Image (cartoon, rainbow, N blue to C red; front, side, top):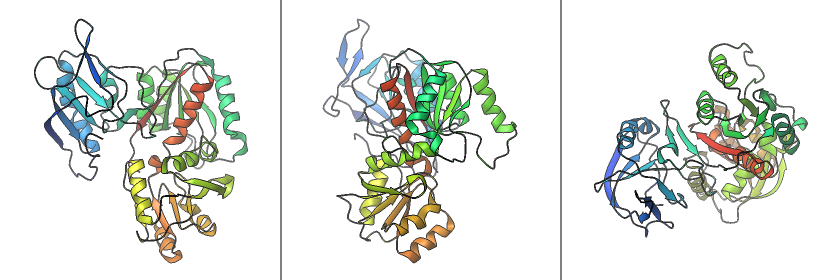
Length: 391
């Protein structure tokens, strides 16, 4: 990477500004600036780099982005943005017209493509300080019937086999056909607003609505969210446990791939706990470092960093209640998204390490894989939007 990773520990939103020469030798791919005659020239000018150190820093950067946007823009064409670190704004500061590049890398390691090359639309700076990343897209424009799409998803994920905490599949009915899907982890208002902005026909998420035990009245936040979907005729499609457990597209399977685990078998209800090992991980400290690097956040770890790690168990999301099952499976460490107070004592007293790597952070990958599967099966557009969540 060109610049170091985000410093998420900074307590106050700050921006660091400095000048740095940007030339083709820094990146594996060259950036071209389209001139007035339509001919490209290499971007070799000194650049002003604005680094956003915290999530609140995104909001703090808005005035700067607006100021740059007010200048005459030139189009930027790039074969790859993979070498740019997240939350970096780069523009030509050597005089003349300004060029703004906003680049976010793919959390999954997949090559990033966007359907809209307008730089400021690659990352949206939102009032609620969420960091929105467009990670996957397609140029396809045809449509498929909503019921056909949902039937394929139900069958692919074997949704009927799960006794879940919420309904799986179509949760809110919208248009009869779908050509443009916005995929995300949670059907929050921020994601709905992005779907509206993108003129999407459907939202595809892991965390939908209508959970067991919730107040079923359509009031407050639920009314606001639902009203927006209905007003814009957007379908809401959600898969919870089926998307966790799928052997190739599921959150557990994809997390294992991201972290480099070899899965030997699954255990627990619906096979929701993966069990395996890593050929290159020797101790808890090495495992912690890999998780921090691959997921982009430092996990909370209960255990000695020197502890030898042979057998690893994992389940994405809020699976701390499955810790005992992981212990019974002979795991040296259990990885999930969240942690509860009793979990600390169980880890200490059992001698099995526990890693809380983030609910959102561990569950970004299944819906991306499902979106990619949709792209391969239907002539539609799918975009993954990551609304940042620290939990």
